Length: 134
Image (cartoon, rainbow, N blue to C red; front, side, top):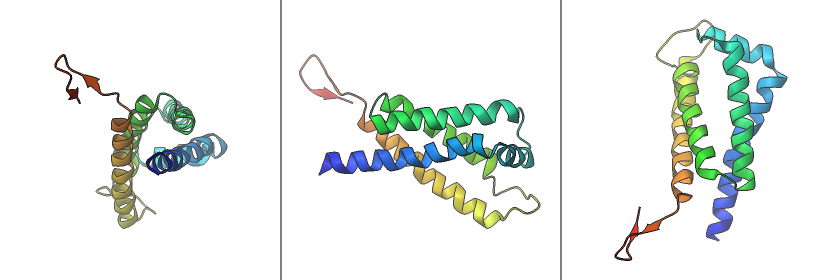
């Protein structure tokens, strides 16, 4: 049961990133416009980097390879996106601050899940006295 829950959670987290990663390339102009609305620099460089990280790291989660690195990369990306694109404390024309607050808090939950997933996949080591260390 434990493995089923972990696999299901890992796969759902992966899908949460893979689809938006693909959409960054499919709906390129929309992504650029969103980033420019939030005054992000170097949007034509950062958008494909974000998309590639989402697709590659998400795929790693699905196939259960390099899970710790992938989860930490996605956690870092989530924080960067959260601060730059869900900045509810700023006002933008046509952007609902309440919805951005909701997205911000939701992304903190995703961030927390990624940290837990990364932590579950760090191997435990035995000390010289035979006790397990974290």
